[in-house]
Image (cartoon, one colour):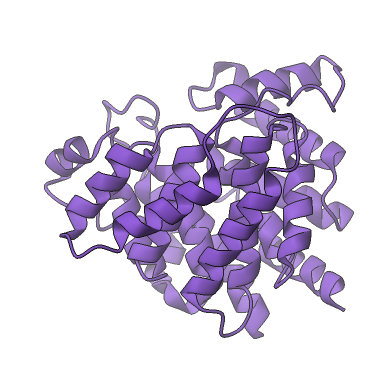
Length: 335
């Protein structure tokens, strides 16, 4: 397995790994800690009283990875990122899961997908989308752009058009795609990856409909500062939860995820554990943080038993086929 292939594999599995690991977390850190008696240290079923994930079983992914897989499929088919292709991928996913009745379709995605299905103008349907859906599913866009942060930014902006075509949403999606693109570079450092996220977030703000929202690059740096103190780890996580936030807001979840990547020192399992402890929209924080960490460390950073659990809990998800397809697209773009 080439270095690039094992990194792309790590990034895609990392997306699913973090998503499934943090899925059982509750809405605030103390609630999660009390419910599980400490950190979540393995895959668990969604608890029956969870407001969203009560029907999910251990190792099962959420809409974050479902949408990422749908977008990966269309990228592989087309060999590039197009707004029309992403729109079709989202509609296919929405119809497959019965989106009208699903409790976990995000507000921006639901509004835009329903408009697309009504035949409305693709350039207009996403003009108010400002939540974190565009970032939670962006990992395939980063994975096809190894080392090419600028192209990752452009592709992220294109992928946002159908549902999250606001400057703040593009900024967040670009930050994640740029971080993953940088993480795929051999011998890249943790600082290289964070710097790419900040650069991409800043550049991404130049795309999309002008919208309200805090600066994502500045909040990334803030999150990194908060997790880099000498406080106990749980206190640092509480600082991120209280100050940066982990709600559906793009300007909260993306900086929080970069903070988790840093405090975990790029280890995907540690990132999943700490994302779950952070709570809130923990599955999205973990999906982002672990996709970046997996791309940086590669597939060998994961325990084989964990990967087997993911595959068995999500039999519909063709991990190897999607990884190989994304790898081929990445190769075409770098030759």
